[in-house]
Image 1 (cartoon, rainbow over the protein chains, first blue to last red):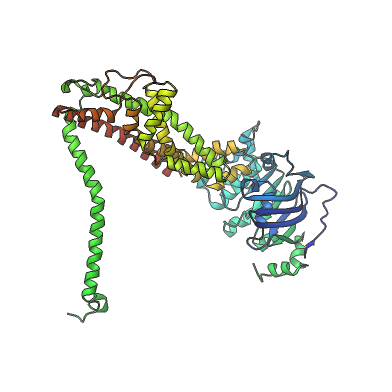
Image 2: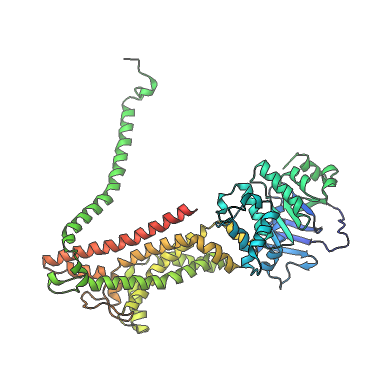
Length: 260
Length: 295
C-alpha cells in the first residue's frame, strides 16, 4: 500500500523523476520499484528507519552506486527529462551537475581555499578562481568566519564549519541539484541549526534532496517528504500533509515515534 | 600483627604462592627470549666494529680490491651496490606502484584478481636464488644483457617488486574512502581521484615500504652471483652495461681468504654495508614521522 500525491511542478519538467527504480546489492533488494518526482527548487526530505533504502535511493541520483561493485540498478531516473542511466551518459558529468554532501564532514587534507577550489580546478574552470571561492564560501555562510585564514588546513575548523566547507566545495562546481546524506547527523544542535538555515537559503537557487532520520528536521526544512520503509516508498507528498495527516498507517506509526 | 585478611593470599596457601611464581617465571622467560636477538646483535656489532673500524679510513673508500690486504679497498663494491640500488629503485618503484594502483583502484573484485593477488603474496616468499636463476636465463642469456649492472638490477627488481606492491596496496587501502567519495562527488574522474587524493595521501607509506624492500635488496648476494657479479674487480661501473660487484659479495670474498688481515677488511666492509642499511632505514623512519605529524 502506498500513497503518492500528484506534485504540481508548475508546468516545468521535474528536477528528478524515478520510474520503477530498484537497487540491489548482491541478493539484497534495497530499493523496490520506486516511482516519484522531485520538483525544481524545492527541498525534498527522504525519511525512514535505518536500512529503509533512503541513502541507496539518494545515491542513485548522482550515480554514486556505480562505485559499489555489488550494486545493480533497474528502472530509470531522469534529470529534467534526460535519463541518467542511458548508455551514453558519463557518470562523471552527472556528478558535476548533481552534487553531494556526505554524512560526516569529509574535507580534503588541504587548505580551506584549496578545498573549495578543488572541484573547479579538476573541471577545467577558466575564470577568477578567487571570486568563485569567495562566492561559494559566502553562499555556505562560512566566509565571515574564514576569510582571514583561507590558507589554513581545513582540519583546523570545527565539525560544523567543516560541513559548511563541504557544502561550499559542492556549490563551487555549480551543480543544479544538491544531494545531502544526513548532513547534520554528526553535528551539535547549533551547527545543525546553521545547516538548516543554509538549506532554506540554498533552495532559492538549487533543488535539494536531503536524507535525514531526524523527523523534526524533515518537518522544518523540507517542502515535500518521502517516507520509505524496507525499500518501499510508502508515502510521498507535501511535508505538511505527511506530518499532520498521514494517509498510511506505517507513516503515522513512524512519525509519531511508535517505531524506527 | 593484624589478623590475616582475605586479600593476603593465605587462604589459597601454597597453591597461591606457586601460582605467583609461575607468573614471574613466565615473565622472565619471555623477557630473555626478547634479549636473545638484542644481545646477539650487540655482540655482532661490537665484534665487527672492533675488527673493522681501524680499517675505515679515506683510503679504504678510494682503493679497489687487491691481493695485498694493506692496499685493498671497497671502492668497486660500494659503487656497484649504489648503482644496483639506484637502478633497482628506478625500475621497481614505478612498476610496483602502478600495479598496486591497478589492483586497488581499477581491478574488478573477481577470481582473476584474487589469483593475481595470491600469486604476488607467494612471489614475495620465493627464495632469492630462484630469482637469480630466472635473471640468468632471462636477462643475461635470453635478452643478451650479459653479466652487467642492468641484469643485476632487473633481477633484484623482480625480487623486491612483490614486497613493494603489497606495501603500496596497504598504503592505498589506508586512504579513507570518504575522501575518494568526496572527490568523485565533485565530478572527478578515476584518474583525478587517484592522482589528486589517493597517491599524495598514500605516498609516504609507499616510500617507506619501497625503502625497506630496497634495503633487503642491498644485502642480497645469491641472485647476483647467479647473474655474474664477481668478487674481484678493479674498476667502478661507468654505465648500466658494465660488469660489477656488490658489498656482500666483496665481504664474502675477503672472509673466505686464509689471511687474518683480510678478515679485518671484511669487518670493515660489514661496517660500510650496515652504514648503507641504517641510512636507508633512517630515511624510512623520517618519512613515516613526517607523514604522522602532517595528519
